[in-house]
Image 1: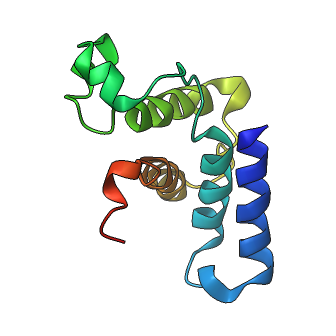
Image 2 (image 1 turned 45 degrees about the horizontal axis):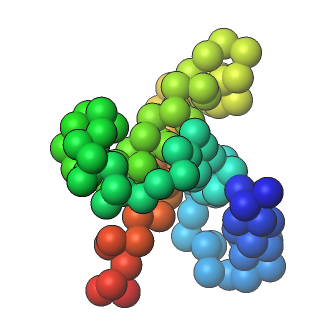
Length: 117
């Protein structure tokens, strides 16, 4: 249910608050999809745990935003499949914008990068 709660808050902010007026429709759509996918396939442990255990995910992503990179990769892999490619109606350039927005938003959920905010 967590993803739906995050989606609801993002949708609320996009629709009622002028905070995101600088986003294109494609970027806003990417943000909403990212809100649903930001914890997809979560193993229930932290980045630190995966790094300490030298888990395959930590090795794959070089100990950097391990889970966030994994969530973004899984989301983009699912969205690439023919039956789940919800961006297939977009021009190729816009498909790239959509994918980049999803990746950027999911990677931004790594709390290790929030101490300076």
